[in-house]
Amino acid sequence: MDEVIKIVNDIKAGNIKPIYFLMGEEPYYIDKLSDYIEENILSEDEKGFNQTVMYGRDVSVEDIVSTAKRYPMMAERQVVIVKEAQDLTKTIDRLESYAENPMTSTVLVLCYKYKTLDKRKKVTKMIAKSGVIFESKKLYENQVGDWIKRVLSGKKYAIEPKASAMLVEFLGTDLSKINNELEKLQIILPKGSTISPKDIEENIGFSKDFNVFELRKAIGERNQLRAYTIAENFANNPKENPMVVTTSLVFGFFIQLLKYHGLKDKNPKNVAAVLGVNPFFLKEYDLALKNYPMRKVSQIVAALREIDVKSKGVGANALSNADLLKEMLYHIFN
Picture 1: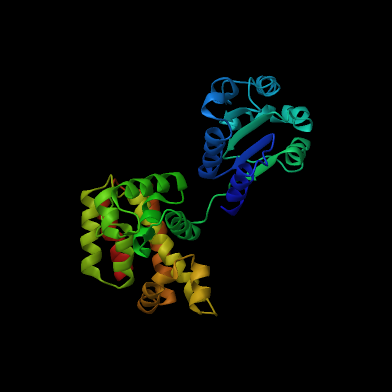
Picture 2: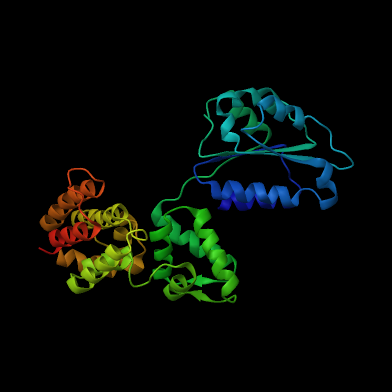
């Protein structure tokens, strides 16, 4: 995120490069930088003749170079944006000669999503020498909560840890999806608000009471009644709660407990870092650690592996979600 801010600040200061190669597994920042350049380098009057948007599947590298070599009309610069440039992976090396001597009056932006250039190649070195290569890396799950806080803080909002965890639980590490949901909340809630689990439930559609996050909590507390109640809700709403996802997340919880048992340094800061969880939730893991000895955790992990296979239709005689959930909880609580 700091690198994104630096690129934007450089553009604002007039330090504009002739090539921006935006690549990597996380498309969110690639889109953000591309959109910023598209919206801000040229004035509205200049865009008509001097801004071109192309798509990798529809053009060749030669087409891009030919367009980039044109001179701007009645403007200092032209902007050429190539979206989905990863479709040109097999021929991207042909950009080498242009990158070696790019037009200073052209701002060429290539959005190379889900892939990266080989740093050893000459084309990569040439682009880096004359322009900017930005790699947008996928965040780990334990980093997304902090990212949510930073994004909201910049817009004068805050969020409760549980609400943040719910977003990550259900949307994973897809920053674009998460940002879309946060923008919905910002339309509804006034600036200065703290987003709560209730806000998530009412405006995004996640149940604050019946979700995998609450199921794991009930399991950690050995609250069998609560766990079976949530499981029954899951069984009645299989589309919203796929068994494969439920098994995976419960399995992940017990893998974390296994790691916790094996830690010599049980300092909260170290535990949070190793488990990849917000320190706010450590008390739940502390309780689960007492309720499930290491040997029991190992047995549960083995049982969950079998249930995961069954949930995918292997070795099971078409067991229903309800039966699989009951089997899962039976192995956990007995």
